[in-house]
Image 1 (cartoon, rainbow, N blue to C red):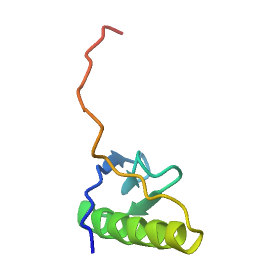
Image 2: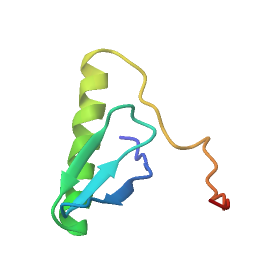
Image 3: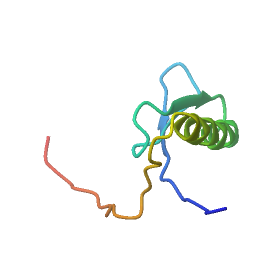
Length: 75
């Protein structure tokens, strides 16, 4: 079994809680009331997403070829 790593972005929501977004897996988004819950839900969402890809015989994307950086701009 191959181990894959994915970046997960957590966004604070105005009504409370956190949205977890997995940029490498199109549409893989979940929510948690706490950071811990959002992280747990993201892991589960990623596992289910990958399982769905396997069932459909599709390739599993990874973050291996991504570079990450922040850009600061004036607003």
